[in-house]
Length: 203
Length: 62
Image (cartoon, rainbow over all chains, first blue to last red; front, side):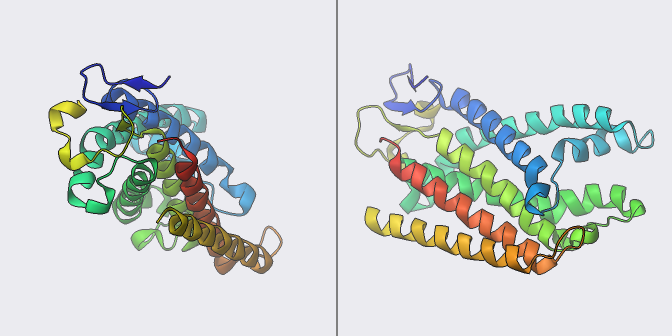
């Protein structure tokens, strides 16, 4: 599965032959693993994070009243997975190279630097999810049913602030898997720097 | 530098274990919930996930 960029860029990936393909695959794997763990959270006494159903409530729940839970899960799941894959693609093509140029300690193409960049991207999405997505979109849907979300996800129904931390755990799992699987490295060994890689090389 | 990174990852792992155990001890039996207990469980699992990921990244061939 390991591939080297066919454009002779000198960069190889853990999976896929280009940054785009590798990012898509990493996004899919990370999204599925995080989604499954989120559905398992209640086993550890944490709020169950059912992002497929939450997405379904947005897309098919509100306009028609609450639709059947299975329909919400499937429709929302499609959007949720596409979102996760595209966030992985954005990470691979835009965010990861950008971090390598702006944050000097992350410039090297090493597994550890790639992993840390994945974590940072996951935590960025955690902030967006907790500060905007949950309060502005999910809050109004669930509030009439006794599960308000609160500012920055700090009062999610009976779970309260731990939902914010469970959301952090979810996005940490996502970012960790993304950073571990999307792992560009020099094809010839050694440590190559993002500061020396051009944008054309990474496409 | 590598050794220091691994020590930091090991520290995160131990910290996560401590928080997880503390949260499990605080957490009452179901169906009652404790916000402190579940918060510590979530944080503990987060630190453990980060540390395990660091180990995988460190162990990956470069």
